Length: 424
Image (cartoon, rainbow, N blue to C red; front, side, top):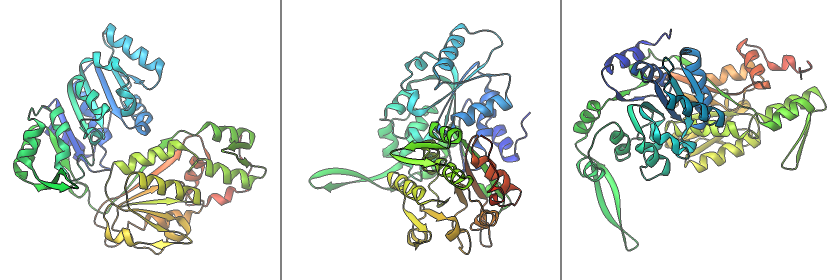
């Protein structure tokens, strides 16, 4: 039995008679629990969850943990996909199915178009805002009966990006009419070519009323919590084959760089590095987080290789960056642009900075020092903070990171274990 927060129970009660809903709730308000419970209450025999790649394991684990009466399948795995399809065709009595797949793979699984009368849930539904993209076109063709959209940033403040989601919710207005009624545009000359630009919005109250009619529910953090609270989230990530090889053999070669853990110190150092910028899964999970929020975000890291990889990712996402480390302290973007990502190295950024313009901290890799870890949390959770503080720990499964976080939770330094031999 799930124990829901009051705001989650209230949202479910408010939408109990709707089979198509959009929970546009702030990051950290537990959309996973609200959306999953709504899916179960809709009662369809077949259910499909489409999410970001880094969230697949989380969704599978969530349904298996809280709804064991359902058969849950990771549809990125060929065996699970075949089994899910066979069971759906056979329609066996007393068996209810949940399949989980990521956006990038879903549109390549044409068999999903054969599903009928099922519940579809889109986690981070803003990813279909471009209705011309292949994944959006495919998803909008699915023959779902029930629909659940989840997003903390459905439009990033740009109403023109709403049309595809509202269309899926059942509003039959054409895109052209939607723009004419709600988007204020102007045609400008762009080197001899006409270009339509958005100048603002109109009839906004009517738009919001129509959205409520079609199941859209907006919820902000400050409407829920007695601030400031602290909410911690663990995001589990798979290790790489190279990490597992190094853990077993104490040696591995990556891109002509040799990692040799011939002492306890070097073994620990390289295990930590292999969990960071050398783990593409972790960078993908970080990308998903950054795409889920346009707010200011702080990312704590340890090594220069991590800094370089994260800066490259931010550049790809067009996010402004500020840095605080042993060589640089530049808060210009942080102070001037509200979607800035602050990259803070623990020793330089975890103490003495007032960063309460943000309420979200991501720990790309953990520190060894309990003091630095505890102090880093206070960069946002301090006098002047009016919002709940959220912390996201990116943790590699079955790795040294799980051990580090366990020790840090006891308010001890992991360096206490520095000369202890690790179990292979």
